[in-house]
Length: 94
Image (cartoon, rainbow, N blue to C red):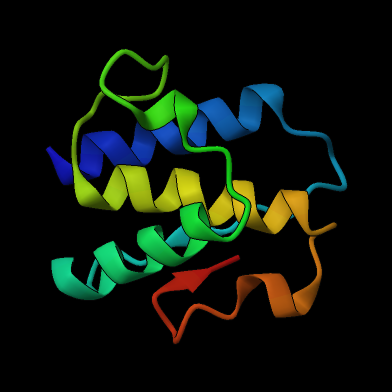
């Protein structure tokens, strides 16, 4: 299930992303607690969380990993893909 969510996220990124885009995603081997902290930080500091709310277009798959990746990438994009906008204590990667 986690792999399918990650693959869905990557497919969405490849369809809608530009060739010069850098995408930030959460690491699948990190604890759920750490991923939730990353999600909370990203969404509390400017990430667009509406698509991952229960009625949102990106709610499914409903996993912390999928929601974390969406939030981390939203934060990263809203901050101009700056290197400092992807420093999530090693829970995310480009």
